[in-house]
Length: 357
Image 1 (cartoon, helix red, strand yellow):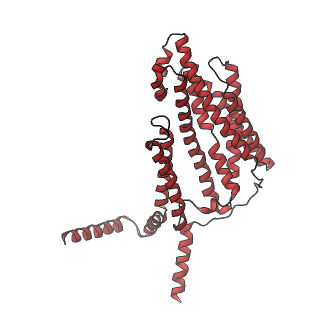
Image 2 (spheres, helix red, strand yellow; image 1 turned 180 degrees about the vertical axis):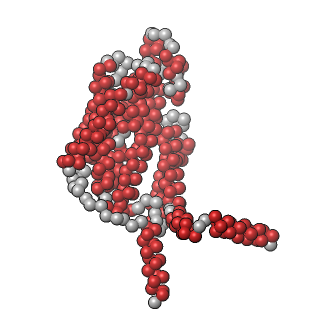
Image 3 (cartoon, helix red, strand yellow; image 1 turned 45 degrees about the vertical axis):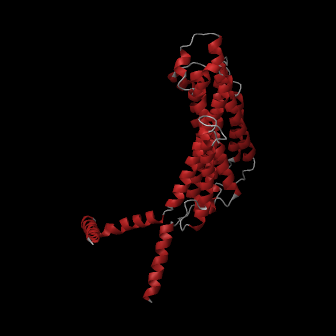
């Protein structure tokens, strides 16, 4: 009884305070926000996030902390796949699903999402400085300067391609050339070794910067026109998510490949270094020159070669799939799109109007 009285008192006080502080004309805005939050697909969002986090945990642990066949690795990956299936089931019955089925009904839009997922620009940018720090023995500052060939040409290449795409009303050429240059860059990175000349990796990174800039901008155009105009926002968000999750999986996959292959070439007494290769860089710099240090540097270089071998295969797949991108006209007029809340409010208003008569 006392609990009921207390709860009733708190409810009344909250309502009184809210009424006293919030002007009448602003209360309906707050009610609209609360209604919008109530209509969000919180369960779908939670399952979607949890599935990918679980999947990434399993991939990052595989072959590094635990064996690929161990329960610690298989369980998170299986849970991630299972939750992804649950999301599709949940999205079918949710009134406002987290993932709309309409953004997946077109094969062209799905192809764009896959290409965004396969774009491994960020994993490449992650492992190239690591190569400079370890194999080449550069300082962090020098490694950052060595990445300028990518960053200097990526942004201008993206801007120029955007201008040309807008003027020509053609975008497939940029995607094809971009994926071709990306594949060539990944293939050239496989050849890097301890004694690779500076001019070789500078030219390689310049080619990669142009290629990534072309792909980055051109595929953004396609993501906005490959679905009906009503799904522009969801399609663009899904494309950006595909790129982000592809980067995360690419870094984790590259890390697993690197650590598994460096362990093959390292001396037996340094086998544990495979699990913390970054921390070993400080010790590596102070090792005296000789056969022992050369063997360690060779192990690092060998692991990087295998990483870029995987990325070359991914880039080649992207190049192959990009051939099937259809041509759309970029001259599409925009119309006002009503949100779900607006549609619900209109339906509610019509029902009230009918009730008056």
